[in-house]
View 1: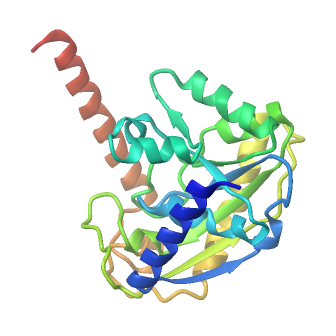
View 2: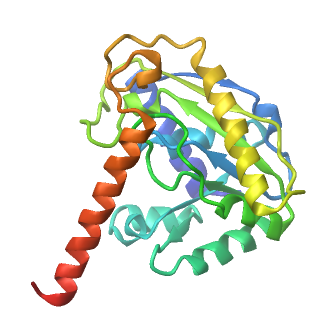
Length: 251
């Protein structure tokens, strides 16, 4: 029994209902009923993690998400995140969060990971980091690919949040577990290929109005292409690095 997690889920479901969110979930039978697994999720918006745990409820399980340390430092969200046993990620000391995630997996937990590391501004699948694959290999657990589509319409990077009653449709697909039989680089590539195909399939039955900011350029939207988005991310990273250097030198 996890009364805090159950309460939070109940509150979240109430909020989803008030927002009029319309969920379509397929493949949730692929969530393991027992044992550890890496839940690998694509990242298009800030609310992804609140939707990504829904398929696990089919077998009454909870997902421990890896989230940036700043969320845990917040005086409001921090205590909640710790009570839900999520895993803080300090990018300056990533080995600690990696070890914690592997320990959770070995204890039979589901650990939610974003292989892209950051939100995809293009809403296409970005290049993956190898952490999800390495965790699965070290803990000897499968990776379960999960793709979400429509979450970027609620709240994404660079655009105002839309948390009122929007009646937004959100589609979720869960793929077959991928066993960690290959080296990390090959497993990462397999995961990337699988999730890219899953996303394309999920988009098939979704209405994509031309010119909308949340629609990929490939589908006629005004979102940047993957290459353009990567350049934007690189520019942001350089600006943050420059700001950090300025603070360190006092200039």
